[in-house]
Image 1 (cartoon, rainbow over the protein chains, first blue to last red):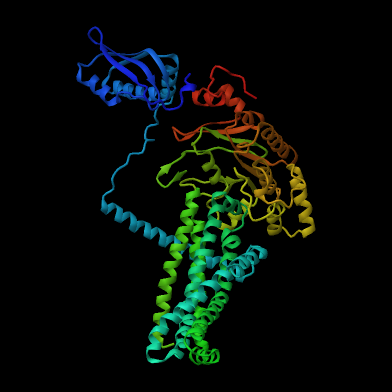
Image 2: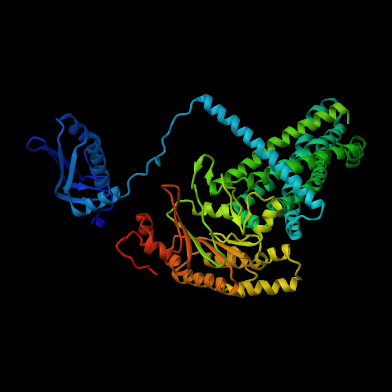
Amino acid sequence: MTAAKMISSAGESGQVTLARRDGSITALEFTGTWVHGAKVEPVEQVIKALGTSPKPHRLLLQSRNLGAWDSRLPTYLIKILDYCRQQGIEADSSGLPEGVQGLLRLARAVPERAGARRTAQPTPMLAEIGKAVLNGFKDAKGLVGFIGEVILAGGTLLRRQARFRWVDLLLCIQETGPGALAIVTLISLLVGLILAFVGAVQLAMFGAQIYIADLVGLGTVREMGALMTAVIMSGRTGAAYAAQLGTMNVNSEIDALKTMGISPMEFLVLPRMLALIVMMPLLGLYADFMGILGGALVTVSAFDVSLVQYYNETRRAVHLPDFGIGIVKCLVFAALIATAGCMRGMQCGRSASAVGDAATAAVVNSIVYIVVADSLITLICNRLGI
Amino acid sequence: MAYGDFVIQRNLDFTIDHGDVFIIMGGSGCGKSTLLKHLIGLQRPAKGDVFYDERSLWQADPEERQRIMRRIGVLYQSGALWSSMTLAENVALPLSEFTDMSPAEISDIVSYKLALVGLAGFEDYYPSEISGGMQKRAGLARAMALDPEILFFDEPSAGLDPVSARLLDDLIINLRDTLGTTIVVVTHELASIFAIGNNSVFLDPETKTMLATGSPQNLLAESKDPKIIRFLTRGESDVHEPAA
């Protein structure tokens, strides 16, 4: 056929001429080169020309001195044939090369399946809002259902009937805890540093640099240590959980567990949730100390406070209950991150993009949950005067 | 069977006898895999039920359903091995969860099952380290771990070369003959259908129901329905001899 003529050829052109034969017969004659890039009259104009003249009964499709052709010619012809069918014109393509006829037959061999074509209908805004609300309800229902399943799985754990492998739990703990030390160190050290600088600018104005220790100490232990760790873990671990479980769903690994009679909630979700809930408070405490260290670095080096003074001031300001609040927050955040990550993973669709969506949704959800929960806990602590 | 409002198939009624090699066949998109999901307890039918020896799968309480499902083994299309475990751990998991065998006994059984599917020596490989065909065979070893009474295969020969596909067919027949396992296969591979099937159901996507049930040879010889004949002869309806 036209294998040699695959490259687009500028400067070449194909012609189509409309000739009226006796009475009710019209002929379309194709000449020249019909390849991608060749100059060709737009098919709409040909159809328009067909439409303006008195309607023929028969349309002869013919070729003369037809040079190279590729998919361009059949697509052109299909448009004309479609038009003919709509208008009830009998089209005769026997005057075309054998190859073109074969391709046209092939393109029409399987009729379009009724209802298969998607029709894009613009949805009114009210419907969009309604859909969003319904989706919100569905999400909420999914969340409640998931939490219920987690609690049931937790029950089997307490009754020592949960089916999961301890080695999986240890692997998750390794991955969640020690694996995150480096980034937690970096972020919390820098946050401590930033807090110290922000406070120092104000406190130095009336010579109260020593109170930087109070600010940094209370700020990290009660608030920033837990919050920053949670944000890191939602990006690091929450997303990983969603992606892992999502991929397992795509590979039918979760189906395989179910048909084996092993609950994926116990086997996959439980170790992951446990690992995060165990490791988060430890990471949070570690972040607290790193934050205080960061604050000390700034205060001691730039604001004429000795390390001992800083240490004593921190001890005076920060008490055990403050650490308690930080740890409680860490526990709550851990549960929220693990829930969001595992839920999105388990609900994941069966395609590569669905896994990406699941990971994104896991991070976005967990950060929203974290910030809302943090505000609530802070508010409650404030009211109770802790 | 339906997804939401979209009905895939309706009015399905067929019986699989013990010791059958039962084929679920039909054109692409007719709901073969969906039917399988209903049979193995992954998806609740919109209406109707599945019975194992007179016992309902979907009316049963979860524990009863678990008990029924423990009698079956499933080979998924892609093998669906647990990617974080070695082949040996994959096969061993059901054994260690549902039997009280000692680790040594389990390891013996694992080696035996892997040897059955031609994977002796691959115990410590991870699924990502072996080829697709090997993953599928390892998946079969896992499905057979608990010596199930019924084995389900989802497109066993998809993605296998003709020789491996033939070997898998031989293995299926062997399992049936030696262990008396009932086999249910979802496939549209004509060669397999005629080589191993002795009972079948034909699903049609257009009328959304089953067109016939019976042995593939009988269907080809006796069916009057042009759709079935077309399917069983690769569209060359004038040929009346089985292809395999």
